[in-house]
Image (cartoon, rainbow, N blue to C red):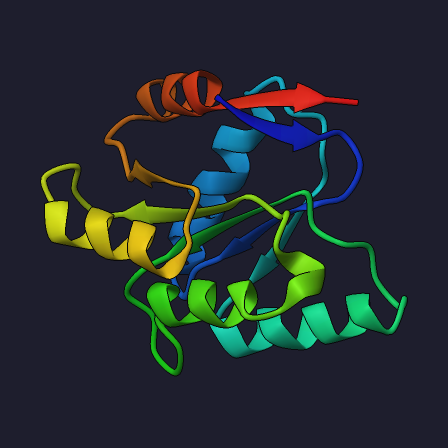
Length: 138
Protein backbone atom coordinates (compact mmCIF):
# COMPACT_ATOMS: atom_id res chain seq x y z
CA UNK A 1 0.00 0.00 0.00
CA UNK A 2 1.34 3.41 -0.96
CA UNK A 3 0.48 6.35 1.29
CA UNK A 4 -0.71 9.44 -0.56
CA UNK A 5 -0.91 12.71 1.43
CA UNK A 6 -4.30 14.43 1.28
CA UNK A 7 -2.55 17.69 0.40
CA UNK A 8 -1.07 18.30 -3.00
CA UNK A 9 -2.43 17.33 -6.38
CA UNK A 10 -2.09 14.02 -8.15
CA UNK A 11 -0.11 14.62 -11.34
CA UNK A 12 -0.97 12.58 -14.42
CA UNK A 13 1.56 12.63 -17.27
CA UNK A 14 0.38 10.97 -20.47
CA UNK A 15 0.51 12.08 -24.09
CA UNK A 16 -2.90 10.52 -24.75
CA UNK A 17 -5.79 12.85 -23.95
CA UNK A 18 -8.17 9.88 -23.78
CA UNK A 19 -5.92 8.06 -21.28
CA UNK A 20 -5.69 11.22 -19.15
CA UNK A 21 -9.50 11.45 -19.24
CA UNK A 22 -9.81 7.81 -18.13
CA UNK A 23 -7.32 8.32 -15.30
CA UNK A 24 -9.15 11.43 -14.12
CA UNK A 25 -12.40 9.45 -14.13
CA UNK A 26 -10.81 6.53 -12.27
CA UNK A 27 -9.29 8.85 -9.66
CA UNK A 28 -12.64 10.57 -9.13
CA UNK A 29 -14.12 7.19 -8.15
CA UNK A 30 -11.42 6.37 -5.58
CA UNK A 31 -11.18 7.47 -1.96
CA UNK A 32 -8.30 9.84 -2.79
CA UNK A 33 -9.51 13.43 -2.20
CA UNK A 34 -6.69 15.14 -4.12
CA UNK A 35 -7.18 17.37 -7.14
CA UNK A 36 -5.79 16.04 -10.40
CA UNK A 37 -3.47 18.01 -12.66
CA UNK A 38 -2.58 16.82 -16.14
CA UNK A 39 0.48 17.12 -18.37
CA UNK A 40 0.77 15.88 -21.93
CA UNK A 41 4.51 15.19 -21.75
CA UNK A 42 7.45 14.82 -19.40
CA UNK A 43 9.08 18.20 -20.11
CA UNK A 44 5.83 19.99 -19.18
CA UNK A 45 5.80 18.17 -15.85
CA UNK A 46 9.48 18.99 -15.22
CA UNK A 47 8.61 22.66 -15.88
CA UNK A 48 5.88 22.32 -13.25
CA UNK A 49 8.41 20.91 -10.76
CA UNK A 50 10.58 23.96 -11.42
CA UNK A 51 7.60 26.12 -10.41
CA UNK A 52 7.23 24.00 -7.26
CA UNK A 53 10.89 24.61 -6.38
CA UNK A 54 10.32 28.36 -6.77
CA UNK A 55 7.24 28.09 -4.48
CA UNK A 56 4.95 29.05 -7.37
CA UNK A 57 3.00 25.77 -7.34
CA UNK A 58 2.03 23.06 -4.89
CA UNK A 59 4.18 19.91 -4.75
CA UNK A 60 2.44 16.83 -6.10
CA UNK A 61 1.29 14.17 -3.66
CA UNK A 62 1.63 11.48 -6.33
CA UNK A 63 2.79 11.12 -9.91
CA UNK A 64 1.22 8.72 -12.39
CA UNK A 65 3.14 8.55 -15.65
CA UNK A 66 2.77 6.64 -18.87
CA UNK A 67 5.82 4.87 -20.27
CA UNK A 68 5.48 5.47 -23.99
CA UNK A 69 5.61 9.21 -24.63
CA UNK A 70 7.48 11.35 -27.13
CA UNK A 71 10.19 13.79 -26.01
CA UNK A 72 10.77 12.06 -22.65
CA UNK A 73 9.44 8.60 -21.85
CA UNK A 74 8.15 7.57 -18.43
CA UNK A 75 11.41 5.86 -17.43
CA UNK A 76 13.45 8.95 -18.28
CA UNK A 77 10.98 11.16 -16.44
CA UNK A 78 11.11 9.08 -13.26
CA UNK A 79 14.91 8.99 -13.43
CA UNK A 80 15.13 12.80 -13.78
CA UNK A 81 12.74 13.33 -10.86
CA UNK A 82 14.67 10.94 -8.63
CA UNK A 83 17.83 12.97 -9.32
CA UNK A 84 16.19 15.92 -7.53
CA UNK A 85 16.43 15.61 -3.75
CA UNK A 86 13.42 17.89 -3.23
CA UNK A 87 11.13 15.30 -4.82
CA UNK A 88 12.58 12.04 -3.52
CA UNK A 89 9.59 11.43 -1.23
CA UNK A 90 6.93 11.88 -3.95
CA UNK A 91 5.48 8.46 -4.81
CA UNK A 92 6.14 7.79 -8.49
CA UNK A 93 4.00 5.24 -10.25
CA UNK A 94 4.60 4.00 -13.77
CA UNK A 95 1.58 2.94 -15.77
CA UNK A 96 2.36 -0.03 -17.97
CA UNK A 97 0.21 -0.99 -20.90
CA UNK A 98 0.20 -4.68 -20.00
CA UNK A 99 0.65 -6.55 -16.74
CA UNK A 100 2.74 -9.02 -18.76
CA UNK A 101 5.41 -6.40 -19.52
CA UNK A 102 7.89 -7.76 -16.96
CA UNK A 103 10.86 -5.98 -18.52
CA UNK A 104 9.00 -2.66 -18.24
CA UNK A 105 8.15 -3.41 -14.61
CA UNK A 106 11.78 -4.21 -13.79
CA UNK A 107 13.03 -1.12 -15.59
CA UNK A 108 10.49 1.04 -13.72
CA UNK A 109 11.85 -0.26 -10.41
CA UNK A 110 15.44 0.24 -11.58
CA UNK A 111 14.89 3.94 -12.35
CA UNK A 112 13.18 4.61 -9.02
CA UNK A 113 9.46 4.07 -9.48
CA UNK A 114 7.68 3.07 -6.29
CA UNK A 115 5.26 0.81 -8.10
CA UNK A 116 3.54 0.12 -11.38
CA UNK A 117 -0.07 -0.23 -12.34
CA UNK A 118 -1.23 -1.91 -15.52
CA UNK A 119 -3.71 0.05 -17.61
CA UNK A 120 -6.81 -2.02 -16.98
CA UNK A 121 -9.68 -2.66 -19.33
CA UNK A 122 -12.81 -1.38 -17.65
CA UNK A 123 -13.12 1.57 -15.27
CA UNK A 124 -14.27 -0.51 -12.28
CA UNK A 125 -11.26 -2.86 -12.51
CA UNK A 126 -8.98 0.16 -12.76
CA UNK A 127 -10.65 1.75 -9.70
CA UNK A 128 -10.22 -1.49 -7.72
CA UNK A 129 -6.53 -1.59 -8.65
CA UNK A 130 -6.08 1.99 -7.42
CA UNK A 131 -7.93 1.27 -4.17
CA UNK A 132 -5.68 -1.75 -3.58
CA UNK A 133 -2.54 0.31 -4.25
CA UNK A 134 -3.13 3.70 -2.59
CA UNK A 135 -4.19 4.88 0.84
CA UNK A 136 -4.96 8.51 1.65
CA UNK A 137 -3.17 9.86 4.74
CA UNK A 138 -3.16 13.15 6.64
